[in-house]
Length: 110
Image (cartoon, rainbow, N blue to C red; front, side, top):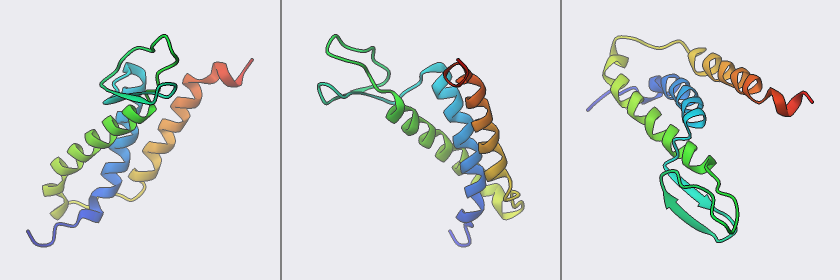
């Protein structure tokens, strides 16, 4: 395949990653769960064990990256005719940051 223009899909990847990350955090869709006290990994979302808490952040990152990669691969054929605006890769993640500030406002406003 010649002239894939993979760099044109980077704004699509960034925007998709940010949106999928919000969904993964809210729905707790983690590809992996890490138990730091016992240094063990589990597939998918598993509850905390008696020995300590579970960390889902790594799983949310993996799930978001795979989802954004899938969206980017689907968008790749359209990149020959359409170039996404560069701001797409910045504005959507900034909006997602504002959403997280709103969702976590209880931690900031006490």
